[in-house]
Length: 185
Image (cartoon, rainbow, N blue to C red):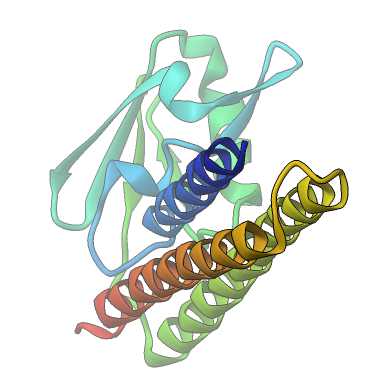
């Protein structure tokens, strides 16, 4: 029972840190990367769809992204989604593809993005602590129902805290890596 709770908790925390890394990859640095826009939601036929499911995205240059929709009718929808996003990019539509020129980041924009990274890290740390809290409640419920002893609860609680600390450190490291990437000129 305890091992099931800890395994489930570990999986949830891993998923949370993985989602954080995916989210951070979408925060713009000074160079072009398809990850910047691939998760962008586009209103396609009335349904929000990730951009990478309706278009091919490539980075032919260090400062250029090319988005080639599989359905030319979705060009306007993709353009609108990019304009509404937090990216701060202006798309150029030639009727066949959308080009996104990625300008070099200003010092002010770098600091704004660093604050955004810190906010995302803090949100994930809160989620990780919430997962820990839920697991702790489950463990205490087992102890209350006399399915485990107080000693087993203590050992499981210590393991749970080690898991939490490890994933918190991993989330913070992902944030530090992204901040370093942002501050790189």
